[in-house]
Image (cartoon, rainbow, N blue to C red; front, side, top):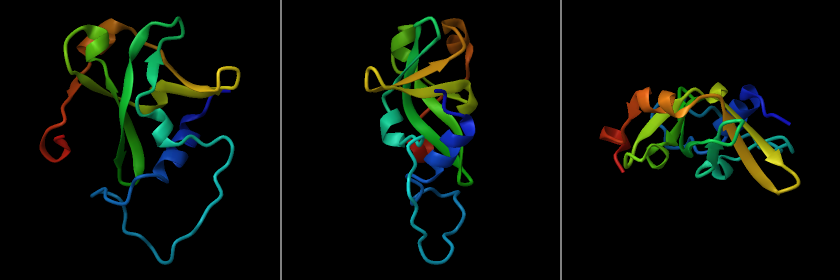
Length: 132
């Protein structure tokens, strides 16, 4: 079962936004929700390996990018795959398919692409307000 980008966006927008500078102001009293079985928690995504459909490694999910209260991207750590030391690229969330594999009790992330595309992708740097 593939998780749609819409479900991914809706689920991840509910987590970890309290200190983001660009989220809309909180409105009124808190509204509590019930999380459905098809939801994905961001804590399950960080560190998840991303592969092509044929099993070629494309990196690991390093971060989730929020802007204006919406998911704008997923940061992949690709340096190990490319043999280049620390290197990060930001990918549109719709480029990655995430699903839960019942048989193995694990999450799986896939994307179309190849290492040449990773090599030529613009590098994301943890600088300025994102410095670690």
